[in-house]
Picture (cartoon, helix red, strand yellow):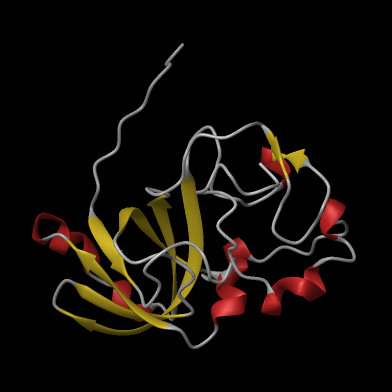
Length: 168
């Protein structure tokens, strides 16, 4: 069984957020926030045809996240939850996923909106967002029932990068 996997960083994500604290916790809460994705030149050929999509899925490494417990308090709750039932950055593999709007391509730079990612975050992959593939009706949303309305005012409070914060 494979115990370890290594990925190559293919670029870097740029945003107005210089630290996790204060960053929106989901792209929906970051509507209109502008940023960019700088794809390294050796991966430029892979950008062919990306301009035909209005939205992209970015997979990235939570480089500022520290290892954490398998149970923690999510941003929009006060009760500890299993890490696989939440979207916080402190996880066994600190991989993030955000769907952003593609505004324009300038060479190997993608200008995007709805960015909820800290500036300088290493990019692992880009995938096209396709509603026919990616939109699913969810008949249950677990512990988030009754909490999703908190999204627009919720921001990272530093609890997943600062061990002194309660909730970890």
